[in-house]
Image 1 (cartoon, rainbow, N blue to C red):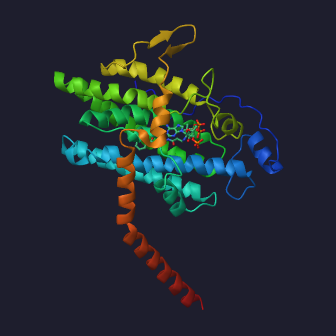
Image 2 (cartoon, protein in one colour):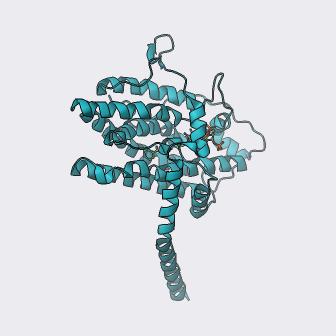
Image 3 (cartoon, rainbow, N blue to C red):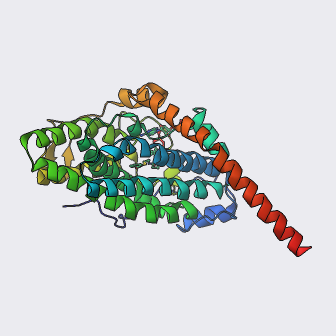
Length: 335
Ligand code: BYC
């Protein structure tokens, strides 16, 4: 029933890249579906797109620690607390791999953090929703990590080597996170009537924001004309936002039945002809409002992040002073 385990997604033919002013070596790597490595020549647009996406991804991982961290001190048992602490710690690790991957593109992680703190770079809309009950921790694991896996498994085949390799480990860990969320909701759903109602309420609140994680429509009449076409031509994205959203719905509906919970959309129905579940249109106005900073928790999340960064200044200063001392000693030894 855990349909979104870590698996290699189906390959899909990609549009031929527009030659433009791209270096021939780069075109050859992309044409062969190879991996671009940090020292390879690459067009500036490709580098910038990767910095934008990888930085946004890294920021999402560390901001994503907040809604779940909110429940560490209130987890219902020592076992649940230990598991949640490990999960939140994994998210910090994902942030670190991703900042390191971004640094291979010639940017500095301190500058990326400044860009986040000054609102010049984004993080995923999903983390601007509150975690009101323990069941929200289950819903985040099941739906948010479930959506993250569907979005990120294809990124294991991203054309940029360091990002693709970081994604392999991230996806394996997300797969475990998704199972722990499913198990929390399964326990609540088969517990008392009040526990089941709490699980249902969490799913009702997290369903639509999870569908928004995949980004704006990038096909059909609502195509927002974002980055998808170019990113697919460069092998950064392997599928459109809409295709991944559909894949997520198709995986999640049977899982909700196994949980004994419903999804808050009466239009969900199997469409024999399409071979997919139909579902209602996503409210992209809400997504854009949240991205603009007007979600329920944007201000709280940023204030907490900036505060934590300022509190940690002495650690960074001490680490830098220690590194400088070690470097000086090495140089003295070599002289
Ligand atoms: N939220 O053309 P599009 C996790 C922006 S962490 C905010 O489709 P793109 C977890 C987009 O940036 C999960 N902004 O863009 C952690 C663009 O803005 P600009 C995070 C969004 O980049 C802790 C504009 O809208 N996952 O799972 O081709 C605990 C147009 O969009 C969102 C990743 O970051 C959004 N939801 O595709 C638990 C995955 N959607 O730059 C769990 C990696 C879109 O034009 N990222 N925007 O101003 C991606 O796969 C892609 O960047 C996206 C967007 C699919 C998200």
